[in-house]
Each structure stands twice: as C-alpha cells, then as structure tokens.
Image (tube, rainbow, N blue to C red; front, side, top):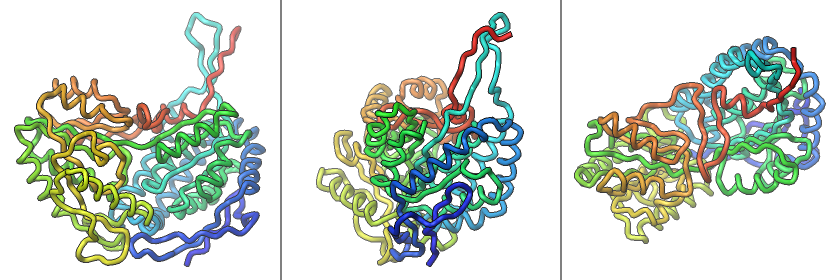
Length: 476
C-alpha cells in the first residue's frame, strides 16, 4: 500500500493539518493500493498563502529562466515516464500499453509544445509602429488548477505548464480518484528546483478543497476540467471574487458518417469511442449514419465492437480496461438499462460483466441502434464504452441533429468530398471538428461551446489564459 498522505506546499512535503484518509482504488480489482489525505480549509489556505508569497519574485523571472526550468522538467519527465505510465494504469484503469503510448506521451507532448510557444511568445510589444501605446502581457497571479481522473497527466500538463510559462504561481488539486500521477509530477517539479511556493499540491474532493479553492479571495484564476455540473458550481462560487474561470467540461459529440465516407469510417469511429474505455469528453458517442448505408454500418459497428477485448489494466496488448470507479460503473449501467427501456435496439454489449471477468468495473463495448436524439442515451454524457447510432437522410438533417445538444466540445464527420467536409465543419457548433479522423496538431486550441465550457487550452491560446493584458500610453 502506497502512503501518499502528505501535501506539497511551499517546496516541501508536509502533513495535512488534520487526519482525513482516503483509499485509492484500483478499478481492475476493486482493491485499494494507496492512501491519500483529503485536505481541509487550513491546508488550502497554507497552499494559497505560499503561492501568494512566491508570486512577486516568480513573476519577475525572465523568459529564459522559465524555459531552462521547463526544459529540465521535461528531461526528468522523460526519465520517469515508465513510473508515470504505471501510476496512471493503476489509478484509473488504463491498460499499461495505452498508458505508455497515449497518456504519458500526452504530458511530454504538452511540455515540449509549451516550451516552444514560450520561446516564440512576445510578452511586450508596441501597439503599432505609429503608436506610443505599449502592450504588456503579465501573469494573472495565483491560479487554482482542478484536474480530472480520465486524462490525469494530460490535463495537469495543460494547466501547470502554461501557468509556469506565464509567470503564475499555483495550487493544484488533482482528482482524488486518480491522484498518484499528479503527486509523481509534483515530485518531478521538486526535483527540477522550481522556487518554493511557485507550485503547490493538495489532495481533496470537490465539495471540500475544490470549493475552498474556487471561492478563495487570494486566487486570481480557476482552471477546471470535469463535469458540467461541477463547472456550474465552481462558476457560482468564484463569482463573488470576480476571478477568471476557465472551464473544459462535458461533451456529447456527433460523428456524421456520409455515404461517401472512406471504407473504414464506421470501424474507426467505434474504436475512437471505445478507447480509454469511453472516458473522453470529446468522444463521438452519437454516430449519425446516412440512411442509404445505415444497415451496413450497423453490421460493421457491431462486428467491430465484438472484436474489442476487455481486460485488466496490467495486461499488455490491445484491449480496453475498466471504467474508473464504482460510481461511474453504476451510472453507465443504469444508462444502458435506460436505453433498453426507452426502446433503442441493443446491437451488441449490454449491462452484464464481460464473460472472462467477475471483479472490477468492466463494461462491455455497447452499441444501440434505432436511437432518436431525444432519448436519454443520446442526450446525456455517458462517459463509458457506449455508442448510439442515429440515421439521417440529408446533410441539413445531420447538422441539425448534431447541433441539437447542450454541449459543444468535439464533433466529427466522415466524407471523401472535401468541399462538403468544409461546408459541414463550418456549421457544426463545437470547439473542434475532426474531419476523417485527422487528429489535432500539438499547440492547437482545445475547448468548447455552450455547456462544454469556455476558454481554450493548448499552444499560444492556452498560455494567454494565464495572462492579463496591460496597455501603457506615452511609451517612447
């Protein structure tokens, strides 16, 4: 059993102000493998105070100084990548090979890209050649960073690294369900030698430390990734102090498969949804299929889903692991049952455990057909390996169905007609549109419309979230 009760505050690992232990559960076997502490208001105050005291000196560091520290952190991260992959695999159930190839690599990729963006970024510049106005980009101050369990190091890197780069100080609260990767990252930051107080970590739940952070008068910005419900609560709690709030929330992406799509479009769409056990906010969990190929697509989808293996996270190979917790498992199973009750056709999968597993939070890859967009399974973010297939007749209908959601994070479309792809992409109401499975490049902005959040993460856009803009007149 790992003992991870301490917090990282002001450059040291310190005991919590009061005992409040929580077991961290391995979702592959439902057994605890680590113990952490849930922090209190006193712990939050200590961390925020350390960040506040460190800010005046840290904001004056040069760009070159920050680059050197981030490059050293990158070197240490690469050296400890195996340890990071093992932590993620245990805490959130990601198969070890997927943790290595995708989760851990994402953290490295963000570090590399933000170092590049920092090198290129101008923090000071004249408004234009004829003006005496001068523009300065200055760090916003102390940042509260609250990260989720589904992409732990990916989201930590997307927040911590640009905050460092901008000259901000911070308090990180990783998910209490999957906190070990965040604590390992804190160890790397400590080894790098960032000044005390610049980075602080406290564990806790949303109702406790999360609430203390979002409402704290000495925190100037909140960056949160998680559920839309929690994002609303954070926004309300932050309102009294008028702090900046950057939210990356839920999604219910549509994947429009036109009749002229490439041959493997349906099968690739299934793999996309099921990867990470369906626990991705921009997963295309509604597949819209043109009626002329609908029956063929159903057969392909069911066949592809039946080929996806489900197994424990520690095993190597191509398979999906469990979902992260009993709470998530119960929620997903209930939604699968509601899909059956609402009259959708269960093409494959269902609420029963996979045959080879009788312990752990495992869910079969599940596909519903004959789904209408007003069903709960089409409206709610299920956050598990569950896909709804919806037929459409015209391009306009496909766009209307896709946009008929409270979310707007990521949408997808498949067609070999490049002009149609561009035309449809422009009409989809989401922060990102993926055409024919093409991934976003490093440094492109990521974020949502409507109840999928506000603000953007990644690249120059992600760096600017942590900066204030000052205009100075009469500059000669």
